[in-house]
Amino acid sequence: MSRQYLPSMAALFLGINILLYSGAASAQISGSQLPLTLPETVNIALNANDPSVALWEQEALAFEDRAIADSQLPDPTLRVGIANFPLSSFDYNREAMTQLKFGINQKFPKGQTLSLTRDKRTAQAQTSRAQKILRERQIVLDARLSWLELYYWREARSLTLESQQKVSELGGVAEAVFASGRSSLQDVLRVELETTALGTKLIDIDRHSDIARANLERLLGRFDGARELATHFPILPSIRSEGEIRDKLARHPSIQVLNALVETRSRDIDIAQEQYKPGFSVDASYGLRDSRSDFGSLGVSVSLPLFSKKNKDYALSAAKRMRASQILGRDAQTLELERSLRREWAGYTRLGERITLYETDVLARAGETRDAAMIAYGNKLADFSELVRAELAVLDIELTLARLRIDRAAAQANLLYLNGE
Image (cartoon, rainbow, N blue to C red; front, side):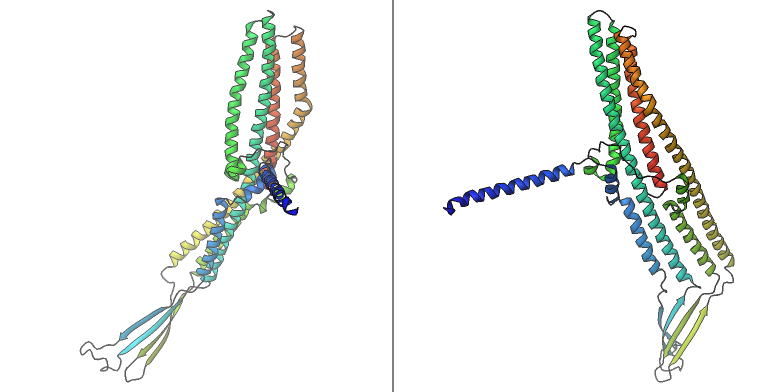
């Protein structure tokens, strides 16, 4: 009896496994098509292994390697030769001074040149690391702005399609009124004109949407960049007050890059100053003679900076001027960040005021005007063109409000960038 059930049980287990596998696969596929939110966009962009970030890490590692390599002593020099060899007889044992000489020479750079060179390379590595952090902050900003821009054009398309549908409905009204003889053909043609104009507007919206989508795909890749956006309006991290952001400008990654460059130029000045010090080398040699006592020699050579002072003076002056240039560049960047802060804060504040006015007053009045035009047209107190203009005015105000919301979110993203977030 049990053998009769074995095939049935096997088929049952096989069916269950197929259902479970297909369910898991469907869940995986549907999960990959979840709407793309703004925080997820930022996270994907930061983990996309962008070459513009990786190159700074490689450059920093290269400078760290250079720091070790450039801080080592130069290789010693080995000499082998025959000294005082008689050319008249070519007899190695004839003259007492004939010898086979072995020597070694070791040069030592001037002053603390080696350690200062290592400090310079370390500062250059810090510059590259600061550049990497700055690039990551720029990627976060680009990801936020690209997502917001694409979100706007999607909303603009939806609003325009809705308005086009309403204008088409008005066209049906115009055709019915024209058929009854109560209006002219002009009303029908006006609706067709506005419907066509909205169609061309949709084409332009699609063009901007394609550009925004391409910018997003550049940051996220083709797969994630092609996903549909979340429908709810994004919520960005809260921003600090203008004064608190201003206090943090000195720690902005772009300023940290310039600080590291100033440190590099300072080490160039130290190295230039070390060149005024004498350099020296140690020389040791051993003379081998056949049947006589061998010779040993030891000497120290010192370079005297007597005739190259002008060269060193100009080299030091150039190093100081380069550092002054970097300091001025840092000051200019600080001023630029300050101007950006004032500009973005003003935009963020005033855009908020305009959004409030549009939401509480302008949009409601536009809707009331449209409804009033519809009632007036039904009572033969207004012409059809006023009805169409009222409908298009609502679309313009809705598009303006959507643009204001996105622009304010973009200003908030810029303020977060200035705050180092």
